[in-house]
Length: 160
Length: 241
Image (cartoon, rainbow over all chains, first blue to last red; front, top):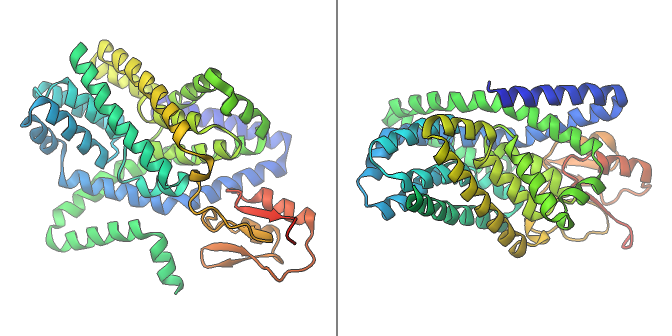
């Protein structure tokens, strides 16, 4: 567990104890709410997780790197961004992967585009997001994030 | 019928399970590797989701609507944006962990722009992520990406605030029904209302509904049920009764 997750747990447990001292009834209602939030999401989240697991099994990091490498810079950036949207990869796997990409000579632009869409745009989480925020919000957010991922990548490519 | 309905509600899960089963027959190695890959994410989910849910529920209970409206509402200007960046940056876990948190904020009056800032910075500007980035890709890379990303998020959250209207946020606006109604799109079948007011609410498969023939409405109890609904799906329309 990283320090931030631990911190979040400590803060939350502290608040929980404080809340319990202040009002037992309200606290119990809150916990019930938390539980029903979990029940409402658990199946969708499991579906997302197993979908990501499968996608990574079909396209391991090396395959992705090899494929992006073989394109020219701008095309590679768009392709990298597109591949990044398919799945959500936690940063701790993403950074070593991006380091590999950079070392393999992929270039900074595709690497940045990949990193941004990887975490911000998720096709696998679309159904979940749609249910939470509505279709229009979901499509616009993911669409704009994709466009800006490429813009950020291009600017970084020019500067670095 | 009930089974069909449940399947339809979890279509994505059904598809994923089918893919695994089919691959188990043709390429067993892939399915096994997929499950192995999923293990990490499940661990991540178990570590982060409960705490996000509890924190969200606690804030929902204790932070009044006025406070959220003041600090994160459409009138909050740059202060709200700054707060949203801070919220997103000190978070942990994948972006979907932010969904219930943002739903709660939105129901309490946070603006769409600020919700987008929280979601986006939760995804790409988390401090743990930045630390990792610095380690692997160097401080210059990290700092430049941070600056560009913050600028991008400010621009596109502004765009989203303009083009997404409050009514777009909920699928199929609930029809205004007379008396008590449960928004079927928001309801997630937690049964809180059935527990709080069993005479009025009942379950129809995975969703709750209000018995329209029910006569002696107890306002106290109804209010309790409405407040107890975690997704605030229960509405009461006085005029048309």
